[in-house]
Length: 299
Image 1 (cartoon, rainbow, N blue to C red):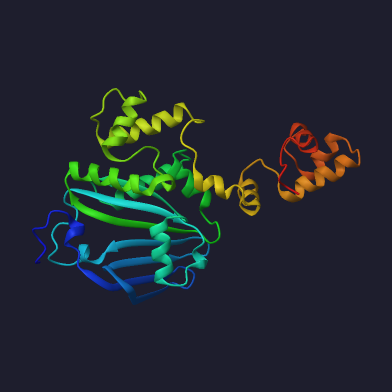
Image 2: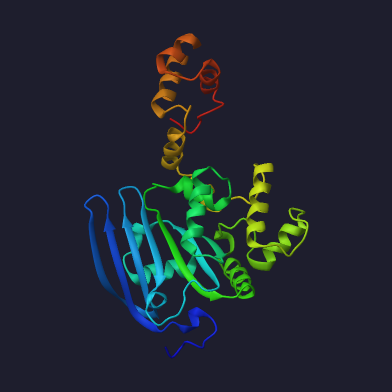
């Protein structure tokens, strides 16, 4: 290939208005492959779009990374992002999507680097999310899973980087994302310095594996600390999202149970009777509802 001697993989990508999209609907088991033409130039991507009943998930890979003659795509470090995009029903065209990505007003992203295949690293991310890790990225992904009008986007961006290039790349991209980042700390070397300055690590020069372990250990020891998540904070303002999350949790009351507790409380019914009638956890739970200490947003 003519670009084979260029240093960074993304610098070897050719400009094209073409996208190749594979749509998969698990309910019908139908796979539909479509060539898409954008109204603007960019590198050609291969997209796999999972159209689930609850989750819409898009994986994006530069098409040239998959072509014969490119070279070993797994050589060196890979750079990737996992994003949560809101208000996707308002996206009517490629121009709308392009503007959304540029402004990032409705997109929240986690950026990472790995010396292994990025999909192997993603499996580890999903495992941590499923085990209830409180890192910002895992919380955001877990608490928005199945929320209407939210799409998940996983993208392989850079490959064949050296460790130094990967750290520089990650630091630059995380900085660009700004307040919409789902990373717990700054990217690259800036993040390594952050951990050391906050006495989370005993030295600056640590491996990516040591960095991940240091962050996880810190969150486990300080579960109430960390950087507030703007995406989750905004979603919690929405009453429908609040009700959906609250009612999905074990040992919590449904909106109908809360309404019945309040009605019976006004009637002067004994607490023990209310517990039995509505199937509440205990008398303490019922008393807190009646006194307005809990479930205040349920009407």
